[in-house]
Image (cartoon, rainbow, N blue to C red; front, side, top):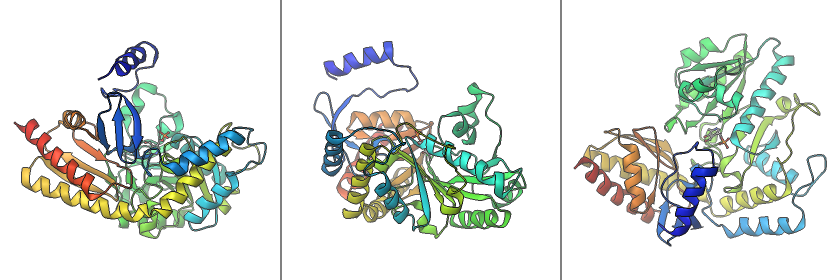
Length: 401
Ligand SMILES: Cc1ncc(COP(=O)(O)O)c(C=O)c1O
């Protein structure tokens, strides 16, 4: 690694809170699916900023939209109308099929905080006494306190007790457990269509349809966290569209502005009406620069038909991983949707495998000790996937040997 990396590493250790186990590389440039470190070494990116850079790095349309708006007006506040905010909300509403309203935040956690607030505000009138939000084991909804309380992973919560009250966790894909949990106290059910940070675990079609039905029967809001699955990651604009669901609330973030920070709480008109003036706010959310970036991102994702590619390439990747699994026995379960893909390793050596892949120019994420996760930009093609599979085969052989 170069001098730039060494300096950054030293300064990071002395002045940055050490909340991440950073990989030993410093990326200085990106182009599509490719990343370059400070020595000019090229990598293939199968992480895309954890599912945030769906268009690929340095997309010229996003760069142009941001530069143009930066030169005109950066920030005034949500107290005023600005360009791009309402237009972006209309675009999101269109992609979701209409009848929705949007609140702009800055991250996925914030979008989910907004969802929890609107659920309680809505229930205050529609279902008095109902305040709990039901979520699933292994779910991930963010690191702020309420989003963390919603997250179904005790290991991430324990050090920060007490958690805010009002959250109940049930096993994913277990309709009986959900049926029991959605009682008079339940205001909302919040679920990822494919759990991401929990290890890439898809909710089944029957579970999602059943969950929506039970929510309707009990007057409970059916809320989908599409922070990771949104914006064509799994094929359709939003993952739930493959199942014909009609959520009351959808939360979005990650890929919405191709790597720039944005989040959104989207609710059906009747639910959105629960928020009155002064109920919720954000200094930066919905500013003109980020909204220009998101509009350019959505336009390019559609123009380049990247959802179709995500569906095709995702199948190709999963087929390749399954073939590798049969051939070597080193991989277990292969799962996911579109270009959101996870696979278990036969041995708990995910970190070692990811590090060896990185040393060979493949940027891959691992979750825990036994899961590899692949979230490449949606322009990822067969050639890149073949290179990944070939390199993974070599690495698995090395680890086994
Ligand atoms: C499904 C889901 N929800 C919420 C979040 C939190 O998003 P953020 O890190 O932008 O706060 C994440 C982040 O990984 C996520 O995958």
